[in-house]
Image (cartoon, rainbow, N blue to C red; front, side, top):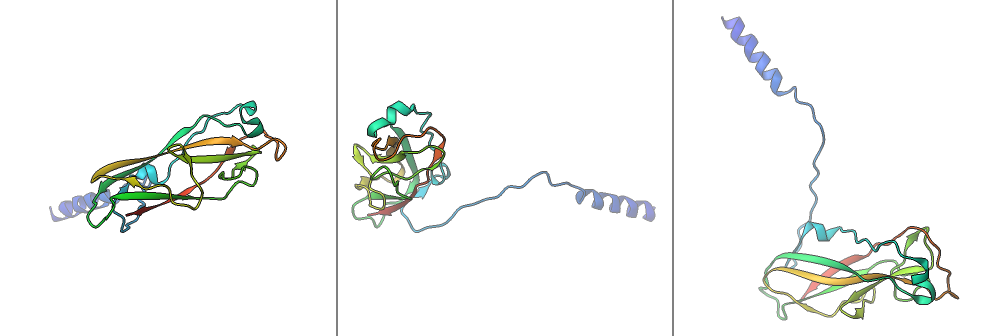
Length: 171
């Protein structure tokens, strides 16, 4: 009887360690001292600017604007004097489109312009302060593709990408 119980005990013990790993889950995040948390989908996001016809970008032309949202949650305005936030976008500037974010890839003669309302965003410079409320908030910006002046750089068809980083400053 003791041998049978010992055998069953060993069998049950070995079953619990016989599980195979089918994958992993990695959790990423950070803790900061800002007034709001940034929703995960806003921290690292991709904005599709579309497949743009070359003729639309000729001689400094531009594509349609696309929305860029930064979603904030759990905002606590305690300690803020103005209850506002500014956003500073940084990235490699375009060498062919003044004021634009530079692109990499096969496409040429283009840059990414970012806007806050109707105003162009200057890379490395804080935007106009936006009023925020306690709780959840959405900061809205725009982005579009701008072509270089044809004499400066020809528009070359191909894929492109660009990366902009953002920093929030609460007042």
